Amino acid sequence: MTAPPHLGEFERIARFFAPLAAEGALGLVDDVALIDGPEGEQYALTTDTIIEGVDYFPDDPPGLVAKKLLRVNLSDLAAKGARPFGYLLTTALPPTRGEAWLEAFSAGLAADQKEYGIALLGGDSSSTPGPTTLSVTALGLVAKGKAVLRSGARPGDVILVSGTIGDAALGLAILKGEVEAARKKDRDFLIDRYHLPQPRLALGQKLVSLATAMIDVSDGLVGDLKHICDASGAGAWIYADSVPRSEATRNLSKTLKNSRARVLGGGDDYELLFTSPPSSAYSIGAVMREVGVPVTCIGEIESGVGVRVLDARKRPIKLEIAGYSHF
Image (cartoon, rainbow, N blue to C red; front, side, top):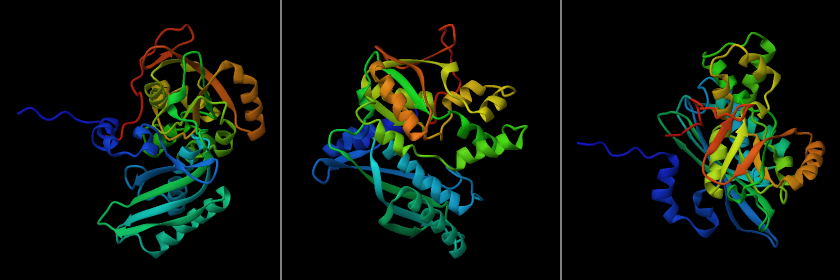
């Protein structure tokens, strides 16, 4: 008997759940849903789940787990240009997660609520034999019709990315014992980038009306750029050597095999990847200086399909890792 074909994450969504989606759900091809809110605004809603042993290590400090859970959702709002105001929390905890764990977890949430100006609105709690499963639904507001979707990229738009790429993937590789960092400074920096994403909320809000498409880099730069291309009905090319790397990542890459694939295909950076007409370059530069987050041009949207990764001589590069898949 032939085994049934394996459905990936996006095939599952398209086949079983997209037919159930409301108009504001955007066909379930974006990171948020948009529904009418106060006059002139829309609510942006997004949700993410993290699972012990899959998305974080069982011995990770509860406060860090809480912050990562909240921040990956805030990053989705940042990629739409929305400003967050609240969230719903769902927890499914095994008996081993007692009061001490919950106290540290809630303290992490409290610290980030203060930092990002948001509050808990409700949720649900349940028990499970394991593993710990945690989910947040974040709510934000954006001017009506101004949310930056994945679907707006057009041939000729330039491709830009905030911050540096590859840090979190290398931090995870260090924690898993797959690679070693010669310098403690580099090791600590990369691990911190994995544990504590920095949602680019201020940058995302300033890019409304400047960016034509935007996504946060959660599943890997190349994979997430492909999501923009698929939604926009276009292709893209990027220069591998133009992708911004931190000093720690550059140091580690000197001796690491497949470093380019890890940087371009690894996930968890939660930087903003967006497209824009070349004519907006001056305005984007002003925004970059205003919010204090570097932005780098790495390529261009073109006609066609898929993402081409090129070396400095415009020769195609084949990556062994093209992005993270949940299934």
